[in-house]
Image 1 (cartoon, rainbow, N blue to C red):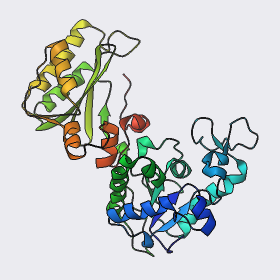
Image 2: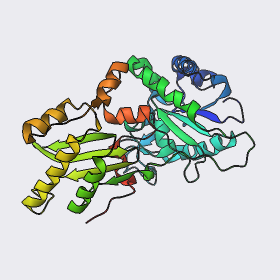
Image 3: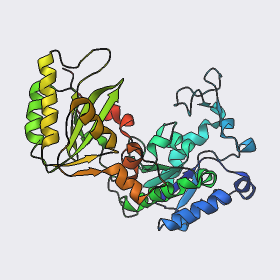
Image 4: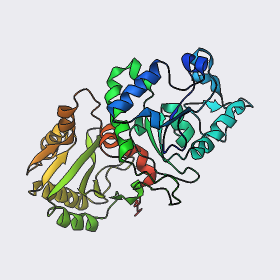
Length: 347
């Protein structure tokens, strides 16, 4: 419901009690809070088209009403599950199928997915936390970008989420909007496929990278440990380029086939960490002391910490790197990007 055409659209999950009574989406308590959050982000709800994935009010406001188990003959198993073992009931398939058409009909260019069910219907993901604040450009039949965020009802239940949602809504204003009536191809955001990540280098590649890294003015550093050992140390020396030096990966004892090779790899790490570049860690107090305590490696040069800076600015918000990446950038947490790497060479 709202103006048409409408380049910015909001998609919720299903009508609540008040919405079902008046036949209009987001006019109850959640809708009022949504309007306030939009205003805080500098957005005017009256200029946006607002709808829900499901147009039917579920009994007791239970979204599980629309889903069933995989073994049910009426389960739409050709669609992704919305949560563990929850598949759409066939009778509600038309509502989901019609959503893209509905959004295309109003000329949607940027769609805010409010809640996990809206995210599932638009992108096929069943868990919203890793994707909150990320920007998903047009893809396939979907001609609009999608920005997922928490449902306003979640904000009402947990007020600490409000800052996150307002921050996500601010991203709407950063998205390119085509002039209405334009036949131009929809603008597409940069893809994570543009990242260059080297994950399993040879020793020669480590040496070549070290020579390049020691000349960089700044670098991001992250360490992964398991079972009391350093598994990998990764360095990012450009916005789109990262290099991982591995040391241990189960079930093997060492990534390196010889002791001499592993020593040479550690010497690369020592050289890089001793260079004068600014070192940027994420909650690096653990990494820095671990390097010194276990390997006697000192981190030299100016040290910055994204986790501490974020905490100083927004002390009430989560401190995870995934949350921060989605908040300050447009990409999901790294674990969701494993299948998107543009370079994963097997030796």
